[in-house]
Amino acid sequence: MDLILPGLDPVSDRPVFKQIADHLREAIERGGLTPGSKVPSEATLMTHYGVARMTVRSALQLLQSEGLTVAEHGRGVFVRSRPPVRRLASDRFARRHRDRGKAAFIVETEEAGGKPTVDSIQISEVDASAEVAKRLGLTAQDRVVMRSRRYLINGHPVETAVSYLPASIAGGTRITEPNTGPGGIYARLEEMGYRLDHFDEEIKARMPLREEIKALKLAPGTPVFHLVRTAFTEDGKAVEVCDTVMSSDAYVLAYQLPAR
Image (tube, rainbow, N blue to C red; front, side, top):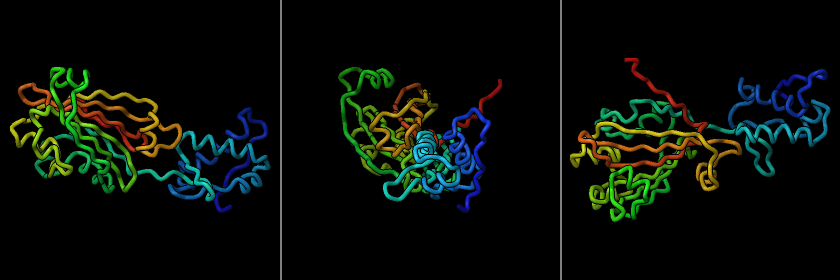
């Protein structure tokens, strides 16, 4: 085994399988085991530590539950490859990005050294839910344009988002097309005269739903950020609600807050 792992501490009160998991976790964190590399086999770990197979499996399962490794049938256990971290900075929706023809996801992903792509785009006109209608100031009879999509970094899914815009604003516009053009939805809104003033966001952390695990290819035990954003114009009109679910291991929430 090229990877050098310490031996077990016979006087420790920490269970043996957790000691083994500690050693492997430290190797991952320090770079001894890099993203995509194969973790030593069960047989190798059994020999090194002098323990039973079930003890090794318990250690490996613990790392998988923490989202550090993934098991591939017939191939072994590998350190989970992670996309570049995308930082949710407080200026990510600044107008200067739209003026350059780039949406927030593209700007921040490229700054992180990643390649941004979008897939699973679905667009339809639907009745507004009670929650969406309330946020947009609509009535129960009003319709909304719904845009659902998935964002990927280097081919790895990191986020799903569903935007809701009043059909009276977005219907029949480029916002209903798969490619909304340079700068994205917000650039198109401003072209139509809806100059944006601010965004209200609510963020909470939770465990993912089954469909979210599948869509984002989440490792067991990986939580998500659930973010709901409302976009307001300069005259206080709400023009979009975006319901977003993000893989927590692909994001850092980074904000600058004034002290005055």
